[in-house]
Length: 126
Image (tube, rainbow, N blue to C red; front, side, top):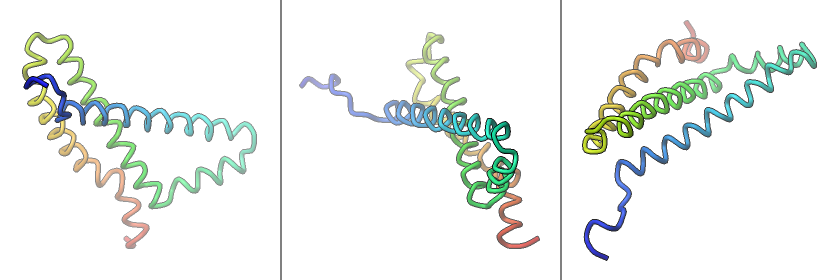
């Protein structure tokens, strides 16, 4: 094949994959959230049991993963819009991806205490 015609799957491919994976994860979270909220109409006691499991440290880690998925999906979505609608977008899409990842890391570090603070206190004590 001539040079330049074979897609080698670099940053663009991985951002494409991550965008789809985070979208599916967010969809499944919303599906489960609707189901557990609907449970209150069926059995308030069962709903209380389910909600009590949400206060465990393992679920706190899952919540942190949810925050990670939502933040990446949102930031990468804005990058995709810029690539599609900004004339210079396709030329600077790689730099925008690295910018998105940098902003995502900063926001995830900032989310550590608000999301995981209670779980750390439960596991290690106040």
